[in-house]
Amino acid sequence: MVNEMSEEMGNEIRNEMLNAMNNQANKVMKSDLALLAPNKSFSEHLPIQFEGIHLAFAKRAIYSNLNLEIGAHGITAIMGPNGAGKSLILRLLAGLIQPDQGRVLYNGKSGLPAGQIGFVFQRPVLLRRSVQDNLLHALSLADVARVERPYRAQALLELGGMEHLTRSPARKLSGGEQQRLTLLRALAAKPGLLVLDEPSASLDPQATALIENIVRRASQCGVKVLLVTHDQGQAARLADDVMFVHKGQVQPVQPTDSFLKQPASREAKAYLAGELLID
Amino acid sequence: MQDFSQAFVQAFSLIGQADPTLIDIITLSLQVTFTAVSIACVLGFPIGAALAVGRFPGRMLLVVFLNSLMGLPPVVVGLVIYLFLSAAGPLGFLQLLYTPTAMVIAQVVLVTPIVAALARQVIEDLYSEYDEMLRAMNASRIQAIWTLIVDARYSLLTSALAGLGRALAEVGAVIIVGGNIANVTRVMTTTIALETSKGELALALGLGIILIVLSILINAALFLLKNSAQKRAYA
Image (cartoon, rainbow over all chains, first blue to last red):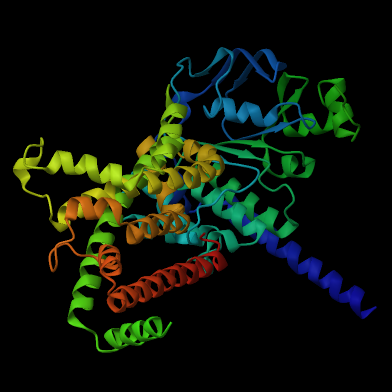
């Protein structure tokens, strides 16, 4: 009985904390704007269009004539079954892989907007350095003035609630902390587009909430966010709209509420119902 | 057998008394070796990193060539450098033959391929892990190479150590270009060779003992350093 009561109280406190965090996040703070607002507006690079993309690995076609358009501001979730090619969409638009045919256009131009994309991979890769040095390295690559770097790094660490870990070896952090650090590192350059590939896969709820809080605050500061996720709850909490990918084809973008309640396709409906979509 | 025991006693006595000849030889040896290894690291790390990161036609051939240079015969290197530095050679006007500088040059030629080839392997392994991250962060090729060198620093120490081992033990090349001149170019290995041929075992044994102790100390220090780095996940 006592255990049940304390568990209930614990849940209440945790929910209150998360609600408070979300309420706080809903107000755009001046400090967030200074830290996260993109250096250059990304609007001029929108929409992002994929035109006739063909991509194959080991003679297996992943995409044949893929066309899509990402235009809206805010947070767009990319959902779909495993192996649908969601992560490849992110890698294609960040220029990490090149299509066999077709092109990726940013507002009609084919040049990738240099330094305006922040990328968070599913598996965090951190430098063999301290937490602070990981951020300083990112700030240095972003050409931030040397004198400004320590202050920016400190502000980023405070944003992520990691200021007590400044001197800790980055690779000794927990999984959630490592992912939060990669997110802060991706934001260090003040990108206009933040791309996240399942950032909270295998993280506990607290770690996920902290990641989502930062993503939401970045979005409120004008950063366009693309998020690959399998988590319907995460899509509901974060995304303004959802793009569903299946069998190398992208279905029209739907507002999140509408996608979750009335998905436009039979495949999306089956996916949301938890059915296995086998190619 | 008694001669050997006597030689050991004399050797330890020379070490114990900090014999000036012994100290001069050790000092010169360390100067030449550490200078050569430092230069080899400055040259070898970027060469190794560039080969690890670069993608260009003929890269594999260069890698094979670099690996084969690790086994360069020291006497041949000594001979070639001798020809270059001799009075009739293209660099004869520099008057470097039979100077410690000539010995440094010979050791740099011998050690750089070792450092570069081992560095390439270390950095290539790290690059496969960092490649996407660095490209996503918009790092230039030079920035990527520098990041990899800094992050592979503890593993690169092992490459430097392999070079140091080669340089400390080197005889063939340094005796040709240095001439083994007393108080000028006489180093530990060349003295050991000379004194042994003369049957003067005490100095040779004393230097041999110091050479081995030095080697153990340097290895132990680097082992401890790397071990401590591994505990912090920096290596």
